[in-house]
Length: 383
Image 1 (cartoon, one colour):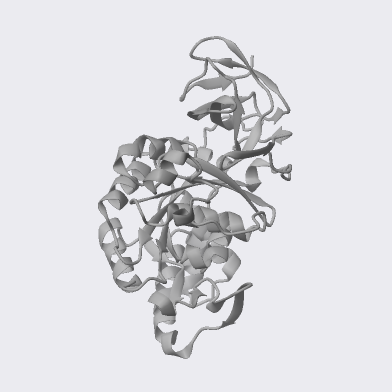
Image 2 (image 1 turned 60 degrees about the horizontal axis):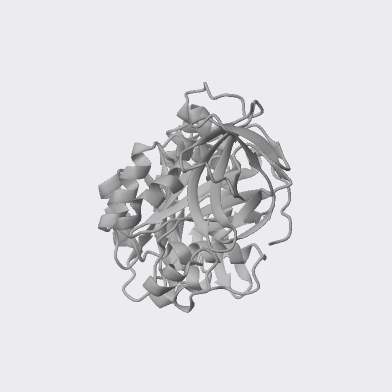
């Protein structure tokens, strides 16, 4: 059992599913996101069978994810529940469950392979669920990485609202930083994170053109910003972030980031983007229900999105709290069976480990054991 986490309200929670074609680096990114929060003493690797989200012996044997896993990452006052999902087509049910529990999907695309069959599948699944999407070009440090071609293909396949918010500095083994298009500054990777510098002169024209495209795309979603843009005013980072966040939430913008997770390149920038730009659970519900969402501070409503059998503790039920607040244990009614279920020792998930959920706000994700009569998809409500 891990130490207790800080308490977070609904506005400070993000639920993000990592989805992609098999082998695009989802588990490595989940591992890296958790590592940069400072909670892990070492960076696990898939090939060494020691990542936080691939813990099942079958996953070690196969060398790939077969179950979804939640990894709670705390980042500067925000809690990001990262849901690592399998990429292999046989386990698409896990992807659907992960998307149903999330408020955004981070779609990973391998910089060496581009759009693959699995990319198309997960994109359609997220689209069918009206799930906001961010795109993360992964493995940018690998030989034969071609980020320009990948971005061009993404725009051709998924539309002009695919909008990079970074320009990579270097490709392949020379990937050494990104230029943040929201402020035009370079983030140069180092052993202790990233340092801020001016954008390199040799890509100045590329950065200028990319920033112009991004600002135009973002401004077109906000009338006030569009007016400022057309009048030639310089748009501030805070204004761009606000409009970008709204555009992601309503599906009018798909931002693109660049990472090389196994070397922690771009990972600090990725977790910051998820914390800043992904919608909160309340914002997601409002968009889904066109402003008619039930109050998040109303009676408790929870849904089980994953059940699994643990050889030591028995049945484990992962659930999302859609409304209400749970303090400690809870007595809830399973709407399928009509039975009252006692949720005791609720835990926030970090892979197979848990930390005590002393207080759970609407929108958060946790797990509980020994709900023998409860199955995936069951709704649990207050009496």
